[in-house]
Every structure is written in structure tokens, then in C-alpha cells.
Amino acid sequence: MEGEYPLGLLVLELQAGFFGCTKWKAKQSDVFNFKHEKVIEFDKKFKEKEKKIQYSQEIFKIQIRSFLKKTQLTTAST
Image (cartoon, rainbow, N blue to C red; front, side, top):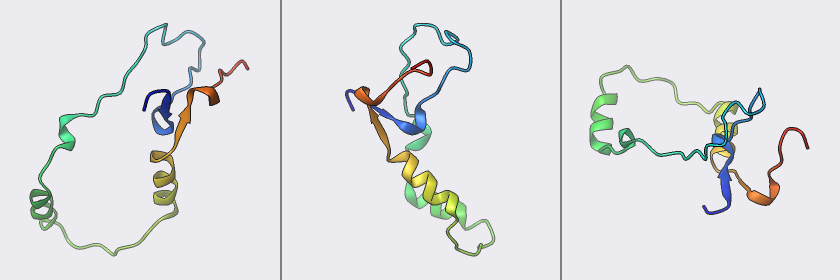
């Protein structure tokens, strides 16, 4: 991922200099380490819902797979 930035994690300062000069990094939480069998077991506690796809799911899939390269980034003032 060197020189690439996940689109879904990018932020734009609404006030110039708000975040300072800190270089931020995203770190995935350990909460994402789970056993699939336990998820299935947990889900069985709930009533079954109608399966459907919403347009927002498609937008989400596009966003989480999108990356910007360093050469594509600009600031709000440019």
C-alpha cells in the first residue's frame, strides 16, 4: 500500500491545520479476528430477514476497494 491511500479512510480538514502536522496511520482492531462458526451461532438467535441488496451496499463495495495514489492527491486549496 506504499503511496496508496484507501479512499474510505481519507478525511478533509474543514478548518485548515486542524489535524496539525501529525502523520496518521490506520490500524485494524483485533475485534475483526473472530471465528466464523461463532458468528453463525450468534446469528441464529435472531429472526430471519428477507435477503435483498440495496444500492448503498454497491456504493460501499466501490468505496472500500478504491485507492488513491499519492500523485492523485491535492489539497482543498488547489
